Image (cartoon, rainbow, N blue to C red; front, side, top):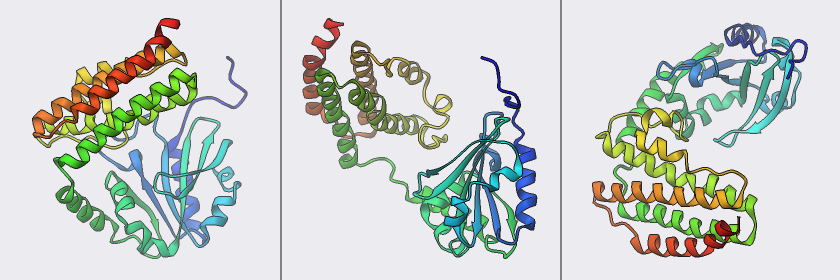
Length: 302
């Protein structure tokens, strides 16, 4: 596949960031600019695949978000669109023709002293942030606040899990094992695969995180949403995950479901022993039998 003229993967994040900062410093409508994510942290810092994550403080975030022209100031735009963030805000994501990627969340100036100081944003900033522009000293206390919040979160973290949330998570997993098997048996491959390779991986990730913590004596950093999982999870788990995802094929989805169930069971039962938690064996046994009955005709028919 030949590259289109002017389009080549040769990102220049440092150059782009310099241009954005220069613009922010001179534009009267921009009051502050905050860098976060990999380009602002020292642990697991940015590499050649990293994007640029920014929060920009402006008088009218909605108008700024709706304006698709401002990214053109900094380079040749290939793709630009608006997306919701994990914290419920909206951001403009921009991909330039050289592969440089920038995500910008516009925030109202007043929120610099309110919304940004909520637990969710502060936890995100604790992973790394750098104040690039602050014309009105809106963010001068932010580093100290982030550091204090990180310490409080460490003290308040619910660890180890108590029996009720552990049982609920395990039961959630086994319920959806049967649910996905029913969809697979009906022939709803798209829906079944979305559950096996999507929803069911959430409780699986949770027990991977919990077990990693249990075996690290509380040390180590498990990040979030599976980030860098290949570095902090044990090698046996990482190898087992290779079998836990499927092709768009009924028989292969049945295989991936079984592998996901096996891995979850191994980790969850081990965790129950280590943390002296009751394991809902009845849910496991019932789901395993029902899934086998539902999936076997699908696997033998392929």
